Amino acid sequence: MRIQISDLNKKIGCEVEIFGWVNTRRDMGNISFIDLRDITANIQVVLISKEMDEQSAEAIKKLRPEYVLKVVGEIKKRQEKQINIKVFNGEIEIVAKKVEILNESKTLPFDISTDGYEIKEEVRMKYRYLDLRRSRAKKNLILRHKLIKFIRDFMDEKGFMEIETPLFTKTTPEGARDYIVPSRLHPGKFYALPQSPQQYKELLMIAGMEKYFQIARAIRDEDPRADRQPEHTQWDFEMSFVERDDVMNILEEGIIKLTKYLEPMTEKKLLVEPLPRLTYRETMAKYGTDKPDIRSGPKDPNVLAFAWIIDFPLVEWKKEENRWDPVHHMFVMPKPGYKNLLDTDPGKIISTQFDLVCNGYEICSGSIRINQRQLQEKIMGLIGLNLEKARQQFGHLLEALEFGAPPHGGAAPGIDRLAMLYAGESNIREVIAFSKTGDGRDLMMDAPSEVDEKQLKELNIKIARE
Ligand code: ASP
Image (cartoon, rainbow, N blue to C red; front, side, top):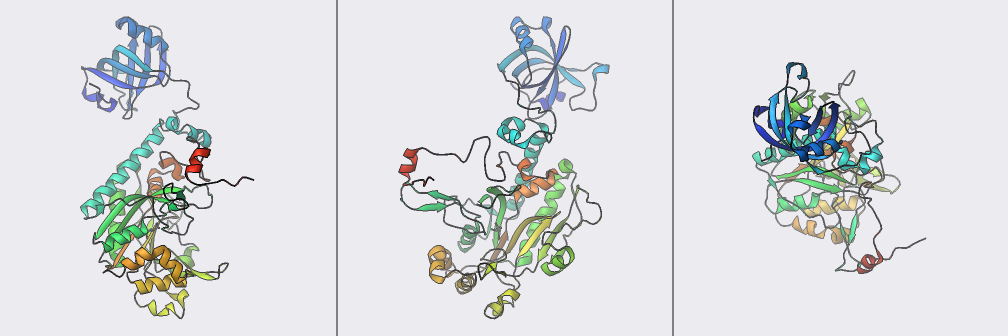
């Protein structure tokens, strides 16, 4: 039975069977050493051909880096002068009895023994499945897994239920363009991929689910930018019968506990807790941005300066389009006492929006939502949707608001951003298993790509060619 390499230090004196990739090989006359690697760790394998069967002795002549092996042998303590206390498993080795080559490997297109920053990123992305063999990349994915696992456990403990919402839907706007998918069965009609589960989670509150969360994909067609991905992952949640501070408090507790839970892996600490709360006005006055880095003096990369920004305006004037635009999205509830300004001075309305920021990055926005049809229609009108169009596009939600919609609110922290900060990376691509370039290309799969005529025809699509 296979044993993983990180468990071998409990097996001194035992015969074991291990599997993995050849990391490196050193020959010293009659004796060779390889470093064998699996997901958990590395181990030194001692190869002495005269102590092995004929087949194994033949096999070891051919061994090269990245060959896939099965090794059977005995775990031994290394001799005194061979001990290397600086590395995991540096005090033990496996003396091979049998070596079987399960697969060969061509020479890799790049070195995977380094952290990889020196290699052109496009090459790493094209061969991401090889890039992921390097320990930095592996560590990042393990960290991301732990982070998501923590969120799931934390939310479950707090009584939230994970509910999946559809990917094939109708526009759920978050201020970007929609990606759309043509329907074969309904010619001329299209699904939109969700820019977030916003409407579904509000509908789940109307459905009486009270506490929802989801590790959700948000898909947005935005203009290219180096650190932008067409799809990103959110810690999306929504809760009923709450006020703004209740939503913030849950998230704050989660962030503080998450940071402490990950600390043994990340060495990252919070600057202060409880997290400071700054108003939008004072933040703009002091930092000139609504995503401030509140660390003072030299920026310690191991300090995470989470902070809240509150009291945002509800809408801002969009000059080019001659209309008001939501500062977050159109479902945000004004702060109590401000609704009467809707007809007179909308620009002065303060909303229930809150942002969580960290080290100069926006982690999320959240808010209490509108739960009355009349008010929702009014805001839709304010931002320039005509009533007929609003009812056509959002009729389901407007109607639902008339069936006992509870007061509710939520937020959706970006998981890629969080993982990036905890991993100490400066780009979200480093914490995504298979990411895309800033202009939305998957270099490994070569997507987007053309489709054949037959498929287009089935979809009733004609490409207008120049
Ligand atoms: N749907 C929002 C977003 O994606 C988050 C929220 O308001 O819960 O930014």
